[in-house]
Structure formats: C-alpha cells, structure tokens
Image (cartoon, rainbow, N blue to C red):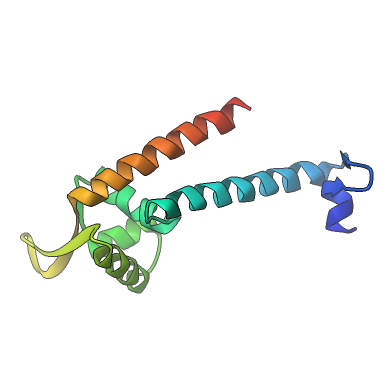
Length: 134
C-alpha cells in the first residue's frame, strides 16, 4: 500500500477512506501545526525545545537546578546543558549558584525570556483554541 493512496489521491482530489487514513491524517495535521508553530517561534528567537525549557522554568518559579530541568524535560543532563548554553547565549537564561546546594547550578529565567515566553504562550494558546474548535 502506498502512502499517497492512503492519505490523498491528488488525481481524484479526494481523501481515500480507509481506517489508516484517519491516523495518517492526524499525523499530517500535527506535522503541519508543528511547522507553523516552529515558524512563529523562530520569528521571536525561540524553538519548541527552548519554549519547553522556559515553560518548565516559569512553572517552577523562574529557576531550576539543571538536573531537575533535565528530569522535567525527560532528557539527559548533557542535552539540557547544551539547551541552557543556547538559552544563555540568547540572553534568556543565566546560570547562578544554587544557595541550597553549592555543587549545583540553577538555570534562571531573564526578563527578556519572560517577554518572549509570554508572546509565544499567547500565540500557542490561541492556535490551540483554533485547532480544538475545528
């Protein structure tokens, strides 16, 4: 079975009705939405990964130890270190010592990050409402 036959037959200009077509249609829609969101985030200097990290920092009260941020993002510490490096070079996060643990470093959100996070959150919330209404 060819993917083109399952999802959409461009010659006939109609959707082929098969059980798998629903799942593939949802996956296609998700990919399209992800592309749109990534494009909008890119315009304000963010990505999905950066937005996810900022979301976790905001939800935690604007700072987290890097190990906890890795746990909340369900990724390894080395990935979070690289992500925080990028956020720090963008001026969105700073690294500070953890007052409760001298061995640990905190990722701390900056005022600029709050501005960009709020802008991204407004867009994604509005886009989510539109998607769910359909």
